[in-house]
Every structure is written in structure tokens, then in C-alpha cells.
Image 1: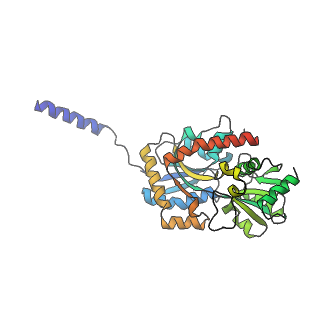
Image 2 (image 1 turned 60 degrees about the horizontal axis):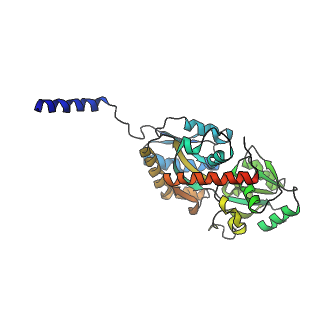
Image 3 (image 1 turned 135 degrees about the horizontal axis):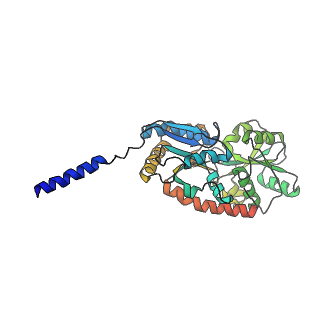
Length: 328
């Protein structure tokens, strides 16, 4: 009997030795793919967080820019990566926009990715050129109504957050006849046109618009936020001025994703590292220098982040229906 027990124990030990041990995560540097060019707001936040993440994870965290196709190229590269945590995606709300407004999209955030953490919401300002004699948003809305089809608003393209926020403002205001002008080259030329008065309205990330605002050639009328910012206490929110806008406030956010099938233990490790970084004094100071106030830091965990996706997609789909936004 003793010999039989020894034999069984030896067999079990040999079986264990024969199985490859699971490698600890991370076993090599982690790549964070940003599906936009270097220097933009998504890239900036990712680069602020990367050094702290690397220190917490014990391996370098490298930012890899894979721009193109409105973020699809970079996102698809992560979707197709090995689900081992070494290739992550830092993306924006374009993922939910795609799921809401495109029939048969090339990927679906609910199916193809593991949400790890929403880290920040970007706040859009409502801007007009100072050459336009309006001082408040109600004045601007009245001017659009008095001149149907004569004024223009800018966006970085169909389905962009600029367009969706402006169309949401139109829907919430009962319908505004204002012409959509797109700037495929991005925000800088759009803001240049606004400063020149070629377009008369832009809703865009207030951090990206700060340099143009500093010139004195554009004016901020409101913020697309749920509450006023301590740094701009005199600037009202869209929710104050147009209460029907409330369902579409805060539609611009940034967060981390992993490929679908990534083990939950790895998701938890990355989440813990990012959460620690968002509480790190130096990292928070860097985010503030970049224009992100404390109330913009979301720190939304994996399950809570996942729970927001379906309702957001439903709200965006409803906006698309009411504003007749069709993407191909």
C-alpha cells in the first residue's frame, strides 16, 4: 500500500513538472496602442500615465501610435493581438460611436475588447468667433434661428464627437438649421477657420482649444459638462442652459482596453496599476498641467466601465436617429 501511495505521488509530481508553468504577467514590456497621431489629447493622457504604469507593473510601458481610419487601424491591431495583457488599447468614445452608428462595424467594443478602466472625461467648450456679436449661448441659438442655413459649425468629420455634440445641442434645442463643415485634417485647421470667422460654432475639447482661446479671437459660451469647473466658475454648462442636453453630456472619454479573452487576473493587475497612478501625486500634477481637473478623472473600474457601454450606445443610437446621422 505504501509503495502504491509513493507511486501515485511520484506520478502526480511528474505530471506537474511536465506542465509548463503559467508565466507571470508582465514578463516583457507592455505596449499601449494609441490609435491616433502623437501629440493629440488621447496620446497626451496615455503618455502621462505610462511611466507610472511601468513602475507599478515592473516592466516598461511603451506608447505606440497607430493612426488611421478614424482610429480603426490601431484598435483592430489590438483586437487581433494575443490576449495576454502585453498589448493594450488606449482609446476614446469613438468605440461606442462606432457600435451605435455603423451597421456591421469592423469591431464591437462589447464583443472584441475587455474594458479595463475609464480614466478621464474630456470636457468640450462651446466656441464662437469674437467677431460674431453674441455673448451667450441663448443669443447664439437665437441668431441661428433668425438666419436658417446661413451659419456653419465645424467638426473633424462625420461621427466625430464634435459633430455629435453639436447635433445633440440642435436636437435638445428643438432643431437648429446650421450647416456642417468638416475638417478631415483635424482640430487645428478647424479652430483656425473659427478664428477667421469662416465657421461660427465649434464644440471641441477645451484643452485642445485653449491656445486659440488665448488669442482672444474666439469666445467660450458654455461647457459640455455636468457641473461648472472650479477654474471657470462663470462659464455655464449646457445642462444648465439647455436641460434637454443632459443625456448627451460627457460623451468624450478615454480609457484602457485589452483584447477579448484576456484573463481577468491580468485585467485586475492593469486596473490596479492605473488606479494607483491616478492617485499618484506626480501623475495627478501632470494631468492638471495638461488641463484635466480633478472632477474629470473618472477612475471607473472594469465592471462599472463595462456597464456604461450599452446605455451609452443606446443614447448615441437615439441621437443618430433623431439627428439623421448616417455613417458608412
